[in-house]
Length: 448
Image (cartoon, rainbow, N blue to C red; front, side):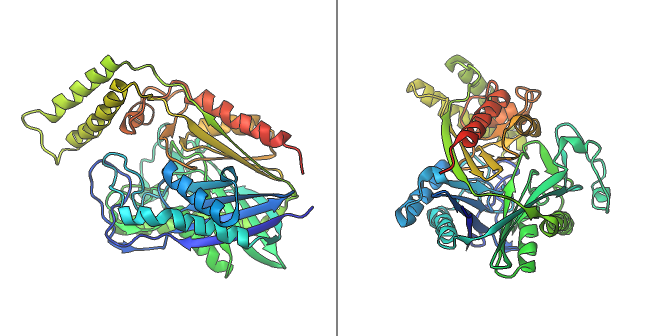
């Protein structure tokens, strides 16, 4: 039984002038030029009568509503079941704002209206381009990209750009990347790579549109293989930053080229050394999970709101003060949460986790910024020979933090409130269990 693989690619670069995503409240960071185009890139796999599609988008994240629209458009066009399509994001902070997250960039309505059709178009292309193909795989060293921002530091970013730089604690980051090469009729038709690190070489002082190190590197490698399409799959990056971040634009562009080149070098090595991968079986599954939350009462929420409003309404408050703008973020979110509580609406939404199996490769995906410790627990226990834990898939539910960080930091304690949700009670263990359950289902799915 042969495997068929197809690729699709659609430009999703917004127009200059849209607000960009990330790096703080009410910055109104507006795109001034396009450094590198942004794409929705898709790969489709077909075997044993089943087809699955992964679309990787060069954007910070996506809403569940955009995913629903893209899936429906794809299903209407080619009949692909919803659960057989993954909408994944690389999480570049140098692209457009795509979700209303209370101050972190205002989404552009015309762009969002067009985005689902562009994502669907990439998916449809990939299915229409299905052909008998061979899959190759390598896991190669990939170092000098980032450091664990919660448990490590970079004292000298200039030194971080020198050849051979390594963080003090590389074991708290990804030190290898997975690379997959696809060949049909004797030529490379596409590739995809998997690695976990925040794409934040460029930050609050930069205004050029691009896919950060992941997107720039993928664009570079595509030029090596004319006509081929390359995808980047974002792994566990919740607590991992690039080695350089928050530089002025000129320095950031210099750093971007260096970091992107490092990643491209690793992927090129993988493409050159990849070995044939037997893959004649495809499966997919998805599950709605209710992750437990900390039990904040209406009274506690009102107390929190009063504290934030006191900061906002201080006599000397000014809107150019970061503390005031953050207080506004929390105030707006708490007001929404209190209103929902007063209407007896739940503050504990269901979350969709999704899994694909392509031969020995298991894609285990969730809509979180997943911490490294969670990924390591999953990979240690997974039954699939090649388990890949993917962040930012189908929606954006904030951080999935490890046990140490669960209640003590911005990611675990504050971000849920910013998103109008209660903090998670035990997301580490519950997400591990949820994704391992997908892995088990995919492993026991009979070949057809």
